[in-house]
Length: 458
Image (cartoon, rainbow, N blue to C red; front, side):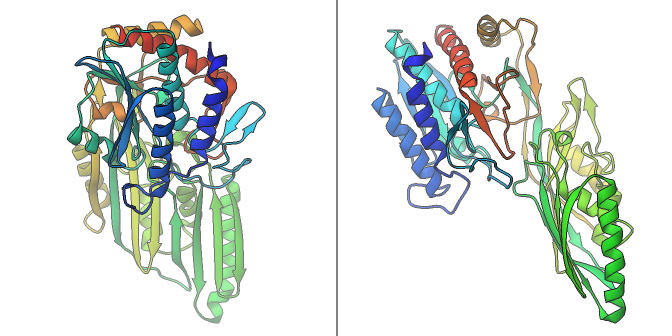
């Protein structure tokens, strides 16, 4: 079935990936930057040629629609991406087809599955399906950095009746944990002849930093001697933790670049936080209030143990990701992205952190997104589970509670459904070398083909 559409799917994904859609300076008709504007217009132009009615909602988002009726079945994906980072084997915005895989940022998260969804609905149209409900494929442009696109959608257009977002895992996500962003900031003073003068790590708050940089400066002749000793000690400590790094130095300064392993902020335990391990490398060697604070209250923990906000329920432990960190001119800021068990909440977490860090550190709750649970026995969940099992033969997997956040929490009666699953090549998001195999495209297409047909007929 997919053979008829596969060349066009590959071309559309490839061209969409070639348009860099990170958050950027607003332009006319593009509140999230030129790249997002261009990509939205491109995908809507493809949808128009496929026979959909298309609408551009002021560059915030747009949609392709087919069918009639009062009810709307929504398929809600996003075209924006997180920054590419370093370490790509194939350029991040090439959209190149290499060894039967399309490479590039957005192939999995979320341009690829959103575009596949559009062609699935096109296939149903070509098969003569009668659409007694409207089917609306919504293309957002700000999912990774705040979902202001969906806020705008809900202000100016109709809410969906029910639907899915192809932006997580199979078989289906029946619950999503609450998410928050918390900023810690304060002043710090260094002591001794060798001092930390600059520290910076992270690209986005919801990803584990895979690189950070810091600079040390020495004062006086004795400081130059101490600098060499400090470099040796720091290097040994990083080596002992298996952390890769480079160091460039002269008599009175040293610049380190420390490398970790990127991962999605919802699963910080799957990464190696370059920020945390760099500061661990400075612990006990560089006498600085910031270094002392970080190692005492944060350290290399990923579940809030040192921050005093650890929590756990039947769906797992709290995830506390240090996504961004900056220190300069005696001031520091640490930006934390967390995923919460259902037995705690953002305000409780803030109160616990305040109790741990004391009055010298400012704790700000910058954003909080409430999670949700849906009934696993609802008609929609059962239909999606049945479609997945029928196509894959996997009748063992159960609905998932996810630490990730998707558009599902922006709407009523909406859940995340795919595309990630085992057995179809690496499905990497928020890391270098994101790509989607043609085998995965075929499997995703087939699952969505049955699932969307069944959803529309509920």
